[in-house]
Length: 392
Ligand code: SAH
Image 1: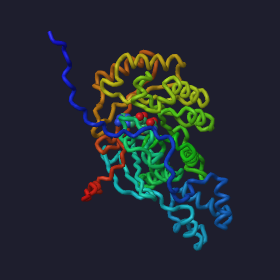
Image 2 (image 1 turned 90 degrees about the vertical axis):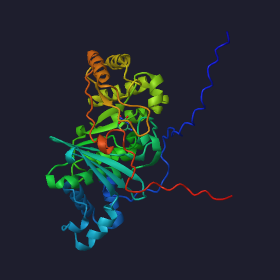
Image 3 (image 1 turned 60 degrees about the horizontal axis):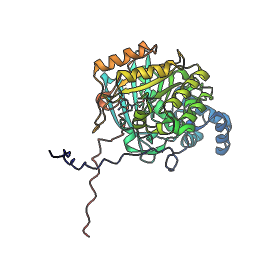
Image 4 (image 1 turned 30 degrees about the vertical axis):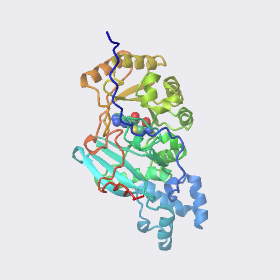
């Protein structure tokens, strides 16, 4: 009998280069300064720099935040000669629409924006009865490299400024103006990891929740910051005195699998991120959401639901809920969503462990506007032609 030698495996095709973790953003030219970058005290400094009394800048802020007005030429309570000067200095255009796609009968709108330096981002507006949600981007690209997420595949281009985040909201409000609606719910679930761009994102949140003329006057309870679990930043957020909701993208209750699905797990593991989420609840009283994209045969096993339930329940009750999301398969991905029966069983086991669980509705799938699909591909532009091969 001859020893069974396994047939030689065919040479595997080289794996496509996967971006690695990128915590620090590349240094790039900064976008022009905008009113929405300024805390109230900075407005006073800006007025001094511009050689105008502070109340003039406050008037501009009242128009921008209080009335959603960004065209200084209409600000008739300003002296005519100041309108264009203050407009140019404080309200430079930051976002240029490149493309808009609608789904759900117009109730979901994805906008692709070009920034001052050509970087692209997307935001998604979703209208429900009594609630208008905007999913905002916090970075151009993302450095977290989660393999199931479209944004994660392209790496991080740069951090957005606070005003580039706020302007996504202001633009959505301008679009909604004829209907009398306003965005009242913000989720930092577009492109990027908000807590890796901490200062700008907290600045943006303050401009969203402060009352006019300092901000848009939204309720902090309507703002959700989603993170892969940058533990020091979660702790810092807990001390900001902001009642925003924290969403933690967990996707696996065990380190072996989470190391693969969320590469940052190699820095802060499941126990560390769950502990920080619990500390966030203890400090703010805001119930934390655990995000869990259900991926067929990868993380959707009943035993993982039980392990997750156990991990959450042992840290207390009433502090957390779980949002399973059927995976939105990204182009070329080997992964797909769990079967409905498997999803139901996953939910059942979590609830049996005493953990409130609601499957997240996925709007905008057909326009690639659903969770994890934002890749800012501009299909109105032909793909770049391959570089010509030069004769040697
Ligand atoms: N960096 C933040 C925001 C990312 S997008 C974070 O990771 O939390 C918001 C949510 O969509 C995250 O929970 C993310 O893990 C999830 N997501 C990413 N790709 C997805 C996909 N293909 N299907 C379903 N959810 C996805």
